[in-house]
Amino acid sequence: MNKATFAGGCFWCVESAFNRLEGVYSAVSGYIGGHTTAPTYRAVCDGTTGHAEAVEITFNPATLSYRDLLVVFFALHDPTTPNRQGHDAGTQYRSAIFFHDETQQQEAAAFIAELEKQQVFNAPIVTQLAPASEFYPAEAYHQGYYEQNRAAPYCQAIIAPKLAKLQQLFPTMLRRSGPDA
Image (cartoon, rainbow, N blue to C red; front, top):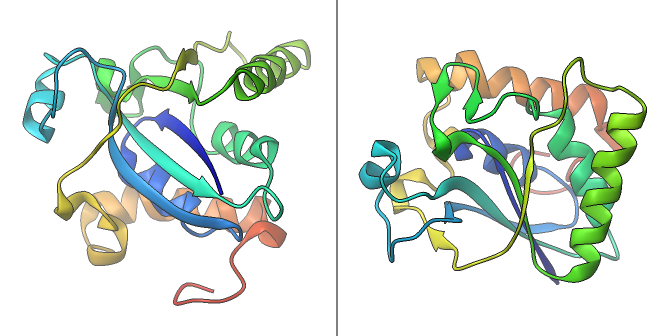
């Protein structure tokens, strides 16, 4: 199993999408890239810790490659808006890839360069590339948030459309067994 860590706005969106992919063992919501120890959701939301809301993904590279994860990541969030995803604004919502080794760093940088060359987005990509630092899992009520709160307005308005897009763009990458298959 390998690890990948992505920040693409609200971690509920990122977690719920990656947990649906075949080859993902787990996607855990949490905090990374800040300057305090053991941050809380409230402190991260206040913008005082420097952490990003992120998801640490444990995946089987024999089933799902790191490049596959990058493709999904860039398809499901806007990497051109600094410190913002939709109505969520602040450094905690920045687009970032926290690489776990030199290979991931090189692959992510090359993938971003490829997207820029192909002009996939209408503005420059601002996704931060940084080495993975200490990852702090978010509080328990954040884990599997969408699964527990599907009827909540945020889940219906923001997360459900991203999951529909995931299903439309990547049907062959979706988990074939389990509760959401």
